[in-house]
Length: 527
Image (cartoon, rainbow, N blue to C red):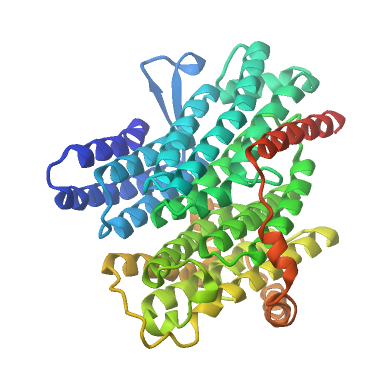
């Protein structure tokens, strides 16, 4: 059963590439993708009662390739199928070539396979396939800047994956197997000190995929390139980067005796703060959203680092929420950038007047990401901050305040008046519908937040009314503070222009990988 979830997107990709009528092929492909969402939902419902396991080639246990779906992996599979469906509907009216559609669905198959496999080597293969596909999509328009950014992304990933390969080889040398469950059993039986080195090697690659500080620079480069279609940017920030978080969770379970949870809690806190500062300094639509993704990943890592019942639930729910509202924001930003022929927010105004549907969807997504009451982000952040010690609570509150300030700056373009001479560009109905659907989910995920958590995660939760009211008051005060910070402190600050110019070269990115590995090795060995 599980093999079909990987094979169907590949078959869709091949069909789209070979079928003579492009428009008819896209209609059929979107229909099949919708059925794949239904199939993924059926798998999700099944895994609430039992795990689903498929042994490929009749080789059982650790001898062959095993696909295994539990509640966590089935959630990621369902999320993948849904986000790709939204991306396909959004891209329906665009003049993209067959190559674009082929690569889009190959990317989906690789990500679903990554979420289902339990083999260290298969993870390497599928991660590399998705990286190569994404590299080509970055360079899709073949502009000089796009080609440069794509090559930098590919080379940086090739260096990062070497750490994983070395860790994989070391794990195999110690245990004789590559199956994650079998390795986890071996780690529990053998001295934990033996696995410190492979853990540090593997987690360096995982941290790179999560865009944790100082390994974050590839993400804004990938978003900032002019050649990447908006649907690709939405999948990258909304979903692709979550594959790193998923692997982080899996490997923390495998290396339970050596996992450096406290270390990654600190890294998450630093990443969240740095992401906020970098996002506030940007004026490019996509770069603001890219750096805010880094800040939200840092927040998610803090939630997992706190490691309480509610903080873990909040982090998992925030992964889902972030995929929804960040996809809506990137798709909406693509429409706005196309309509105004610029990505500079200082040159855009009156979006809500010219394109009310897109403006409303953007507002709904913004309210979701800032954690406004009655929106999905407020529920996940409420759970994430439950049980946080005072220092962590202050850091998380700072990240939330920074996020509010970022999107006050971002939302300025929605209001005001457009220039009378500006031509109103026609927006495809499929694009408008997509961003409205995603924006609507942001609202429904807040109204029925606790019910969504119980349904998706299968865990009993309750929202304390008094505690939630305290969060509402804190949010209102943060809105006032964020508006003051933006208008009185940051709007014309020369410091932001200097921060905006911070960029890491390829050499610096490689040096950061080595530095992160060394620190992880020392801290994990010491802990």
